[in-house]
Image (tube, rainbow, N blue to C red):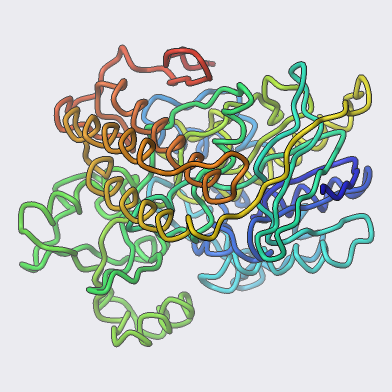
Length: 525
């Protein structure tokens, strides 16, 4: 039997996008914040580098826009990027006015440099713990706000949509096997990306694209799903354990060497180690392939040890716990990190379904293009999260939620092992067939595998593991089909059989239910 709850704002996701939006929305009505795991489990929590925004006189929104466009490899839309770089500084000021403490140097904000940026504009907190500090700061505000109810460990398995309007969602709590129907005037999807579907990833286990599957099932358009950003520098260990080594480490002067002791980025790009992520990740991949190595080295031996320990205290300790001296050299290899595409949205996070919004990594706002500029992600959460809430408060809902009739979700524990085995099979196949470099043969092999796995799984209607498997396969199919259709190499999508950019593909790929994939032109100035 469904328990029922009603709110003004339903926000799904507890990363920076969801927390910031919930805190802001609470000034306009009753808010429920739903999260798949604990409140602290999100990509944002693990974000190390910081937030890219113009906060200094030697910088400007125009320069930030230029860097974003350069990293985006021709697929950034002008209007959303222009909004991001101009409204970004205001959102940073909002956080500071709320009491958020960013790192300072001699009384001013401390600004880091990261790949693709031509100015030091990345502000940070706790040295290399910006995401953690932001999440802690906003969580305290969320939990102390009487206008916000938090529901943890709830899997959202269906959006309540009818006549191209959204009225809320259905959730299931595996720990006590309860079903909940949440109705709301406005629903916001801020559920993060999908990089945890890969075997080697920097993401928490929860980020497997649930939001994509939910929205796609209701006829919402998804865009640019072929673009997954592989972070160049994730810690390498023989047992597979990994964690992110922030872009900011290279921003402070770290160099990349192969196992022969050659600094290989000098010949690859004029910015060397500070080239955009797609360039660095591909260069590392090529070194590993050509030398038959599993990793390369990130060397900090030429930098001052005390500066490294102070700037990156969390990373230094993590490396030390694994027997690696970060002040010397760290073994690294690329890992799936960020879903560049996502739910297609307008300039206020709106979708083609009324009262349904998306923002943060889950959304495809037009900002990221084919390759996200480092540390623009947290800024996008703030800018478009606030715009979405503001837009929603100005809309009037046409009528109350209709009477939705749905069967409850149940859990068949006998399906668990087969589910976990297939998850592992998919993760390995994604790494092998849809990794940094892919081609027609590898993509088609993946598509065939997904089809086989779908036919092999004993799906049950309205069942927990069946729903999760269906969503996972759906997301992987969308990614692989988009990768197959884009016959070029651009940004985070590199085809060994189409090695160059092709002007015919300066467009966004769009996928929606019951239609073939199609491309739409980018929005120029």
